Length: 68
Image 1 (cartoon, rainbow, N blue to C red):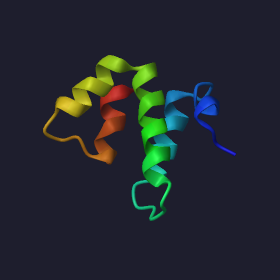
Image 2 (image 1 turned 60 degrees about the vertical axis):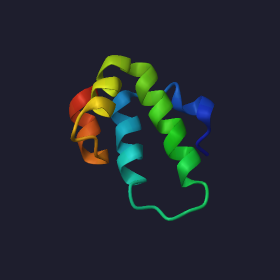
Image 3 (image 1 turned 120 degrees about the horizontal axis):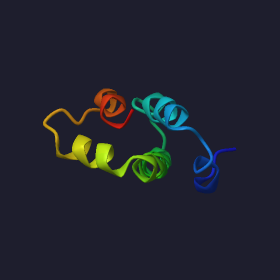
Image 4 (image 1 turned 90 degrees about the vertical axis):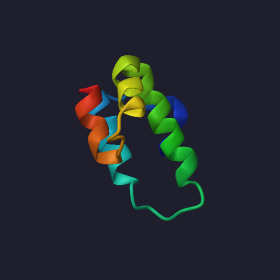
């Protein structure tokens, strides 16, 4: 089971895989899970995450290029 706390020990690569896997999920809780994932990704690479947010191409698919 994924919890907010369990995300802290995951690699950045794994977090990105999970984030990308949620792109088209239709579930009431998906916004919460995606928020947790983005928080964990930002914690591991705040500069890259901020650059992604500020970019003109801040799609789910482009996040990986900014933070790896």
